[in-house]
Length: 233
Length: 77
Image (cartoon, rainbow over all chains, first blue to last red; front, side, top):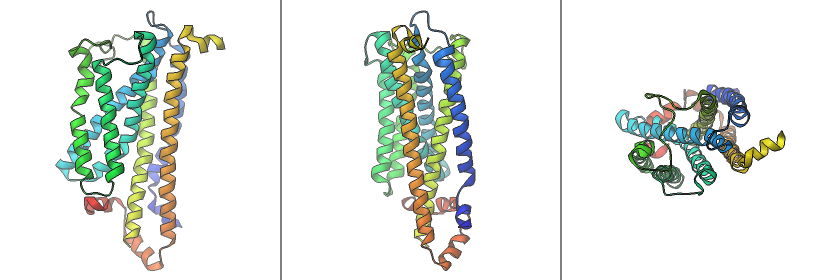
């Protein structure tokens, strides 16, 4: 039985607990800031608080898909299947975040725009991203044991990444219901610090959650490989 | 105070349902991933328990399963 422990990737398992603990602490702090301490918007009132779940979800889903596409390209360059395992483990949390962004955006749309849904460039491109995530996950589920699953999932990730700049710049390229971005890395951020702080805290909490799910999923994939290794003995 | 927090000047239903939906998604994804992990771990324990002493020795020679990823063909992962 001691040998079994050696087989376990104890680092991954220990880090899961640490990440879970950190996530819960930061989430509680973020919820307190987002729901209680942050001010209401002068125009949108308290409905602006939806931003604290909507925006981080959208950012993280975009980031995860970009990373998945990068990993898919790296597989072809470095011929290392290890990157597939990472991309596959990232996909579930990316999908859930894109779903959260769509649903919370729809809920936010009702009091702000007076409608649950509009075929606005940003919303539509975000829906396309969600569909790409779904295609990626379904492909893995259906063709798990087929040779071509790696090629198909890579093509989905690489094609899907074309949509990422469309989502990002849709508010600048077209006249949409969405306002231009208020938080910028290169340009001036136009959001007040009393709203920026909870937004950053919630983004950190969501990033930790995606890291937690990634570690768990990655560990699951490694154990699957161990099981197949034992079958061959 | 509590009622004001829930009501949020008429936006409470939108704000709280957004947060609730997010937390439900988090809980669902966490529980589903955890269940999958435990299932695979249990499979591993069962399979390892069925090995004879020679197979255990053979398994011990396998340093780390990362090597399996590096050496196997795509179809066998």
